[in-house]
Length: 488
Image (cartoon, rainbow, N blue to C red):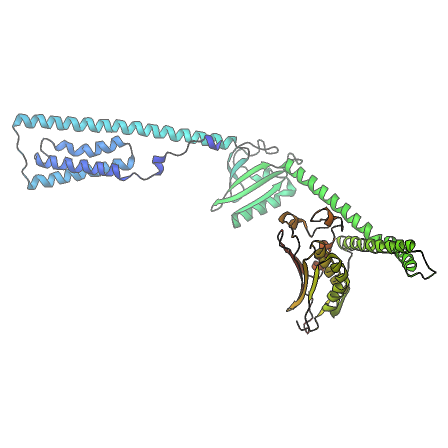
């Protein structure tokens, strides 16, 4: 509808311009000079002092008409003064009579033509304005929402548009909007009107009294002292979709919580048989009950190694399940942060050597006492270093730095590996999300960084990942766990 509405006349919005003003002023000066030369206002060309007014009328603008009248009066005044000081040219009586008739006739004709043009232009302008008003009224009546003008009491003074379901026939006349609303929603409507009057705008949803299954939404905006404009629309379907989405979200959360609780409760059942497998395979590796052939000894080593790897994966899954189920509790204690990180460096040194990657540790010389969960800190460092080694090719380097900043412990693990793409960066940190190629994804279940982030948040800290493809990755973990007496 809006596109079909005519724009306001550009001439009505723009200033008059200098051209018409100069034309009227120039004509006034010329007329005054001719009248003065021919004997003044009472001379044969005296009526020509009215020509500026005629020209202004022909231009068809109210402000130009006023300018023309002023110019004509000025010409009359100048001609009158000129007639007192300048005698002018004398003509024969016959010539004088002819000139007087011609001047009077031409002035009358010009003024009449100007007034005709003015009247026609005014009629056209009035018709254009009426058409614009009709089109604007049509657009307001046909737009999909119902627009209303309200006073401070919520009384409807005017309405435009299509009445939505539940409001048909209820908004005619100066009725209170509250008459439309169900009793349980009237207090909220009054609050929204008060908020709009106080703060300029407000929104409220309510059910109409006659059709409680319908849901209407009202947007209010203050347009003057004690005056409001409201937009009323049928939001029944949108509310049903929102309710369906909310129900689906609640169901998904309930299922996810149930899954997490199930895995958390399965901790004993999963670990017990695996510990037995690892224990018996270790007995066979150590040959405590007699010698084994080389082939069986090799199998025992493989069983123990696979069980150890499976136990790590199970521990990660169970830890994440407990965190998601909000059943993970930190066992805080005071200890030297260097102990946990250096233990991880010793543990991962062999893996780094086999991968051909240089593993370096930059730890402070002085103790760094923290109040934190010892196992969680070790798990953070272990996951970060393991992840860095997985993505760093042979010949690269992984650097682990530990430092204190006031009360914040900062653990930084940087590698010179393949880096992480921008789209993968947005996903990393969520459970079971992985980056890299098939070989890297096969090496885990995607819980390493999500556990790091979860353990960081449980300590009130954060994890920050910075990476670019081909330039390596830096992961920084900041934990506010340093004891006040500790020296950074």
